[in-house]
Picture 1 (cartoon, helix red, strand yellow):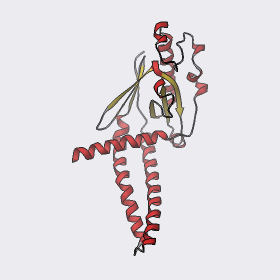
Picture 2: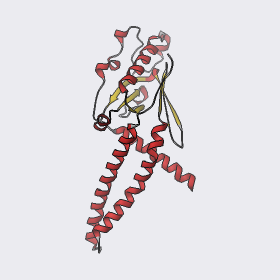
Picture 3: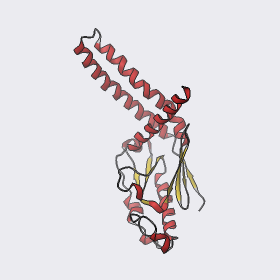
Picture 4: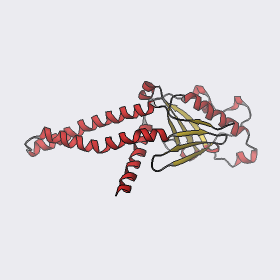
Length: 224
């Protein structure tokens, strides 16, 4: 099979801008209220004005860098589906290439949160044996407009990979991974479209912000 390459939709940028803006607004309101209460108790001459200035400056310190880095971050995302693994390439300044081998995959999950549905996007989470006891996924393919197509690609490649494994290879795989199968009817239930779980989950947004803030720290270090 020729490797299939996918990129997130440009609507991912819009989604992240909207979420960043909403987070910034909520941050300003919450911090302003806190500072206003403290300033009022301390007898400051203009507690409301002080609260607003502090809240705007503090939140601008992270909203502006994140907003600047969202477009190049989204453009840097590349997903590649191969015969034996899935690859995620990401990074603006610090470029990373993450390999997810099919031999360790234990679960595929399609996520469509409320903002994903609003912008017509989806996320494919690929979980491996090493992460089975943890809440997070090994890797997330975010911002996909054709998430069902990517799911089918990965599930099909995973089935072909396991179907081509010999008994000796199968015995060396992690116990949590489903055994190799040769017929389509024996594909583990987690790989059938009926088991795609559509849930309200935007944890991938936090992962994106964390990745972007990492880029901000690198920029600051280089400037210094």
